[in-house]
Amino acid sequence: MPSPRFEISEIPVSPDHFIGGARVSSTATFEVRSPLDWDWKLGEMARGDALTADAAVTSAVAAFEGWAGLEPKERAQYLHRLADLIDENIDALATVECADMAMLLESLQARVIHRGAENFRSYADLAAGYQGRTWSSKGTDNQVIRMPAGPAVIITPWNAPWLLSTWKLAPALAAGNPVILKPAEWSPLSASMLADLASDADLPPGVLNIVHGFGDEVGAALVADKRVRRISFTGSPETARHIGVAAARNITPFTAELGGKGPLVVFADSDLEAAAKKAAGQFDDSGQVCLAGTRLLVEASVSAEFLEMFHRFTDAHVLGDSRDPRTTISPMIHPDHLARVAGFVDRARDHGDRIVRGGERWKQDGLWYEPTLIEPVANDSEVVQREVFGPVLTYQTFEDETEAIELANSTDYGLSGIVYTGSEERATRVGSAIIAGTVWVNTFLVRDLTAPFGGCGISGIGREGGDYALDFHSDLKTLQISQGSVC
View 1 (cartoon, rainbow, N blue to C red):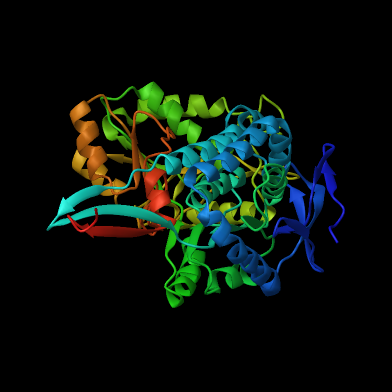
View 2: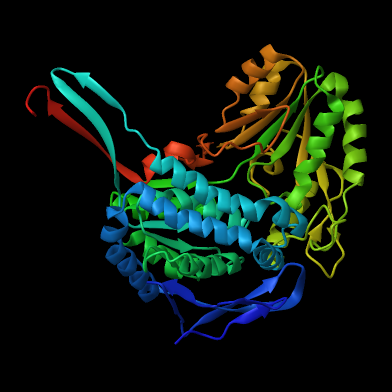
């Protein structure tokens, strides 16, 4: 029996799992509160366990033959219907997502929710238009064919839950794989709404399954199931290690995007005002962005000029309610995460790192933290080497290009990097030298859905995006036919 729905600003949200095309409750629940006001209890969500995981995988297995048996163009029709429904419900989805994880409402309404629709459209069309490589060799005609791999488990983090869920679901479904999605327990609500839209789009039962709960209770059971043939995860390196062990036991292909510690490198020949404005923009979403350039590396000869501009742009930020269009910096997701971020700053202060600005909680009755800039005493300081995932940047200077590259590559992470320079030659030279999955030059967060996305080092395994994601969710077959043997 489905549980009663709760309402957020008069928008109904189901607290239940979505398995086999139906809502499924659990005896145990967990509460979800809003970062906008921690006294605002949004609802009680079903808390899945090993039995829930088994039911979801069983449902996906049962749906696999029928979904995989459709032509890519037929699957694309379902995904286009789903995308259209997303666009028809942007305001409702944005309102709930804002309440659930505090991303700026204006951004959700203008860009983020629609990007979820575009994820489904883009991957549907890319899969439908696939033309496998063909060639002749050694008396044979050869063709590469994509075969749907089987049920896929997708585990998403609490930051940008809508964006990352749709980004991962779309290629898996377009490739012909039924999916079990486990959203983060801190921000599960937009995923629950997606299940309703999938039902309205008439996706066959079991093609999309969503289970709520905690990683060690339901997530661990999902990734350990031998029937699962693909695992896609975004989160911390610590959790990825556990998932990787489970995947290895079953020889299940596994991709992981695991956060970053991106450098933002500013050369003296760059547009300093544009660079400083972009640097101050790294505080957006309270710094809860894995791609952010959190290590400011500035050529020493322009350090004072850059800092003056950076402080001016940072002073223009407005901390406040994410529903207020004047707000530019939202509250953080959870009291535990706020405490984690504050702990990094406190330890940096105790270590002797200089707090250039910020370094304190803003409004003791809320979850905001001041935009903070720290000048470390050494490059091996914890605040330089570990991902803080909050509105905390570090500031270091360099003398020349060689030192800039050395500093940029001096952490274990390698997800992204940003370079500001007025030299085309330097842009190519430094951009190529930085070890990262993506490097932007004189811009940031410009994404092409067909480009590979992922990290180096402890920032991840594998690549998502475009054909890279569709290949991951497929078993690739080479079909070889002897020339002249078939009439």
